[in-house]
Image 1 (cartoon, rainbow, N blue to C red):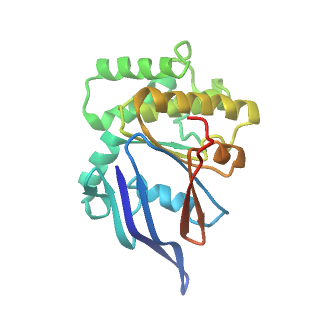
Image 2: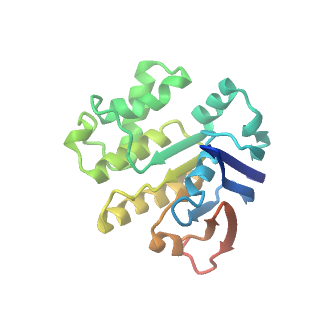
Length: 229
């Protein structure tokens, strides 16, 4: 379970102090699904970075399973990210010189697994997202939707507890958006993941069972009793 209390993040922009997050309180239960929406610059991606241990708050606590990520050493924080948190980005972030299977394997290197186990798990992860026949293809040989599926497999191959997605459909057309969301929602149900997604897409936001809206660093959470679960 995530518990955020009083999370504030300030940046310096020249002589000006920018408040990206202002005293955010948020709880996300294990297996929960939350969509984060708001205007550009409102703090959405900053909040996701806090949840993923990619940045630290200026003040407040970001507690995952009883451990405050904000106070961990870099070594311990890296271990938590490697074992518990999978992250998907809008830009895919695949290594262009590695094929699909090799890209997915990169997520397992920090876990110290043997090469044979890495290959096997990467192949299984790609098969689970419908790319079992594309293991040897480079990113340049795949469509945008296929590349995002590789990125999803890479995030899930380490069997994380949490899946974070930052605009995962932002570079895709509407039909591919729906296809990728079907994959993500299917994996959320199958694996019991805690799934948190940032999106500008109001269609996706309206379909979410729980919506967090951020404006000027402040958060409002609403429940949608009519969302499809």
